[in-house]
Length: 557
Ligand code: ADP
Image (cartoon, rainbow, N blue to C red; front, side):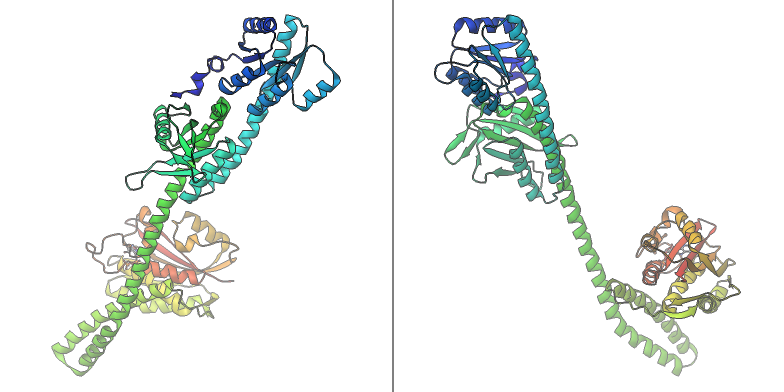
């Protein structure tokens, strides 16, 4: 049979303190019982120590034990000691007719709370009982606070565990630390792809059908339940356990499992225990859910990494395998062009142009591969940024002219001297300039400028800019001066929400199938990779339909 702790003890749920009177004097017993009942206590009387002990074990918990010091068999003081073992917070008042100093000392050592010397007045009885109960309340409160503090430590410990198996073991172990019981089970709710799991401590304990029913009932009620079953809940070797407390584990309103602790003790499911276990269950529920989410995230992350690895491998193999046949095509096309005339020469020229474009794509793929393998070397040399800009402007001038655009460069009167890897800087600026030409209509303008910038000016510009890998990795102390190249076009522009995505590998604003311009969507990703190894930053400012400014800032200190 299963019983709800909050309703199983009427006096507790109705707020009446429960007093157990133990005195072999029938009249005394009756006087105490009547006085205390009329003072508003729920009273149980026993005439000897054995009956009092049975009541303590089977009808507890009591708030106070009022015991005569002298009873046949066990003395009142011994009874108090056992009562304290069963419930460390029980208040005890000893009635004594002949207090000696020795008895007093012995009693103090045993933690007896108060004394009542016989004969006593009725008012004295209620006063002493009231005082003792007040002390008990304070003691209980301090025990509760101590338990909650230790629960918080447990909660921190279990919340730090992300491995689900380790976590399940830790939850059972912590539950048994806070609510000492012979056996503990954690039932972790399963899902469509993960079966329900039962973790137990000690490992040789077995969950019996009675235990499963008890857990099911606590889940039905949605709260902690004390269980006194008609069939055993659990077995530890040949020993069967019939009493327990079951509590559901919830996270964000969803049941994620249940805890079941089993013991022979009748007071296992006191309201204090129930509260403590419910608190632990809440923490454990959230920790279980977090561990579950973490393992899902970890799985997804590993899947992504594997995909990334496969993609890199594909890029590496494809670019490598395409290079050899392409070299043959380029070689023969060049030879045919040089050795032929008229139509054949034109055809060879076109084959050559196409093959050159393929070579550029393969070069990009090879660069990605080298960057992923960290095989890109930096060759820094003292150089002048304005000279690099002049070179790029001269190289791209004819392409712009072909599209009917004007391409001009505005350079500072004094050279911008810095250490740079000219080849890589040219690749980045060439890519940005090529894009400016590609995404600007005929008649548009492209202006390339080079300037000295202070760190403050750069920081102010970056605050406005959408993040990209070069911006994100800026940290620590940054150089005070920078050489900044800006490529401004009057082209189609880029919508704000696209401005950080264009730096991703293979990303293009318009799909390559529908747009007019060619490209692989790799240029800006490679530009970022090359900028990163130079400690440089790239950013974009743009408005759809108005044009864009792509900037490259290189450290000048
Ligand atoms: P690709 O040019 O090969 O498509 P990129 O990585 O160089 O790849 O550029 C990514 C995308 O960013 C381009 O497809 C284009 O949509 C957008 N983009 C880059 N530069 C400009 C620009 N100057 N004006 C407008 N859009 C641009």
